[in-house]
Amino acid sequence: FIQSNLSIEMRTSTSQSDPEDFEELKKSSVDHIQETLQELGVERTGQLSPFAISKLKKDRLSELLLDTLCMLNDLTCSVVDSSYAPRGVTAELLEAHRKIISLQSELLECKQEKLDSVKTVVQSSVRETVKEEIKSFSAVVQIGTGGS
Image (cartoon, rainbow, N blue to C red; front, top):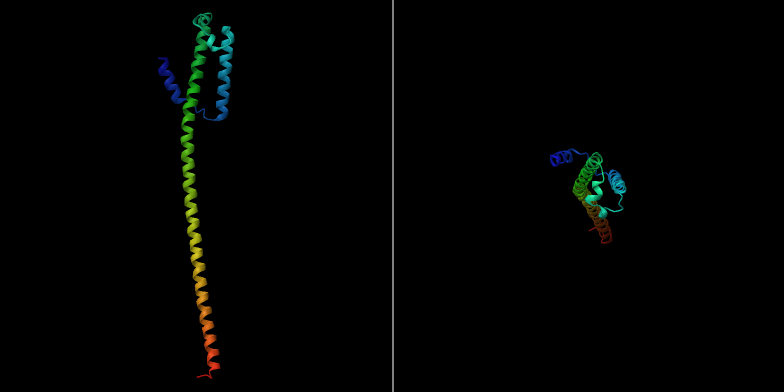
């Protein structure tokens, strides 16, 4: 029964993927563990035993179990949410790269069009200049040969 409730709560839990929320959750978890260890009269979790835990009254043990399960649920949701975050970031990064490549392609096309335009203008200008120079040269040659 408890497992099915936790599964349902896990699916409906709010996202804990915000780094500040995760740090707060981590701190509250550490605090909860430290307070529980102190209440049980031990310094480390390795010192816990069924005997140490049996010193607690049933009501207090139920509270600790409930708090611990809720905290475990929040931590699990946070880990699950954070495992999906890199995929989303990667997808966004790939999309940004695609946009950059597309824009670079458009920029290259524009530059190629400008280059082609300048090339056409230069060729036309050179052609006209050469024609004018040939006409001038022909006129000079005609004058020098006596206008024949």
